[in-house]
Image (cartoon, rainbow, N blue to C red; front, side, top):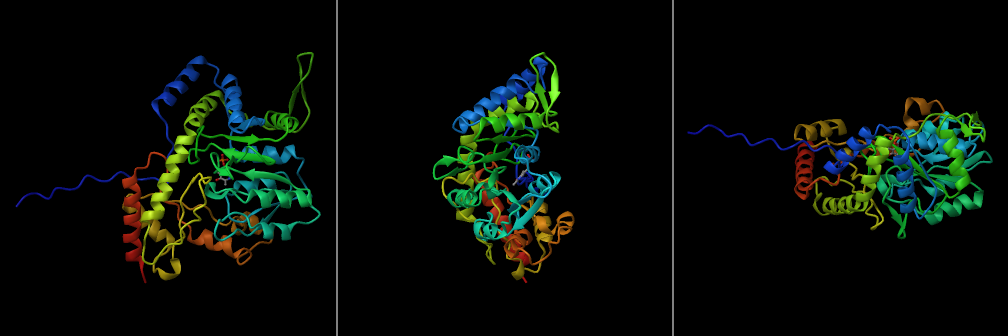
Length: 383
Ligand SMILES: *Cc1c(COP(=O)(O)O)cnc(C)c1O
């Protein structure tokens, strides 16, 4: 007899993880040592690099995409009495940003395949009070941009694209943000590139970018005599230089990160087989940047809840997330009169969605392990 040898535990796989290399760590240390740590030369350099990445368009960076969305809405003069149309299944910050201006978020259902805002539903929701559309490029899969901008033009609406998940995505070969009205990106650690926290707006119009800059920093305008004036009710959303320095180095690796995300998504499509089967996300084309990979669980054929499945996966070292709950069913947005049954596709996706590990440093063997573990867990969970 010999003593049972225990296998070394496999590392825990979170569903998202930023890629930070030693060059980035050193660069951040350098920026700290420079003692210019809040907004300064690195912010200007990062904005210039983002502008070049987006075909020379004006860019301003912010402390988050949520803050950037608020600033975009203020810049367009949206407020009390206005309506803004957005999908019912996206991250909460869009609804909050709209509501914080005093405007009313108007939810519409999503397409069950792409999980992007249903544009026919958006058209039906337009009223004389509608000012803007705020669609999300869900998981990095671009919305149909031709149809979106045709709708906006016909009704004289502004568009703020929630591209928080979509830096590196392309529509018909063109980068998201390099055309269209206003695009909003996020650099949260779970996104395609990170500045720790951070966000950006890409504009079509330089004058609007300058106005957003005022909303970003106390509403300040500089006067010729060296003093400052306050010309709008601004806030404080300026990105520190430390974060911008990280952003510059992340942007330099973005295409590489995106290529790896696409390979990993392709591997999930090849390997993810369960009984009962999950509903896989829309495949998209090479313009999809695959911020996350989220199948829908076959819950009606399982005896376990999603929470039980997530716990079983976590116990086997697989981290998962929910992207996202239905916004109209949250306590706050039910106060606008929304409830169950209003948006069946959004509600089904919110109920069944499960975000699996996907990030550039994930290995092929990790994807195989996730697929095998999910297969085993769903087998156990069968009715
Ligand atoms: C992450 C995210 C946001 C918010 O980004 P922050 O930078 O964290 O404020 C907004 N919309 C969507 C779709 C997101 O995924």
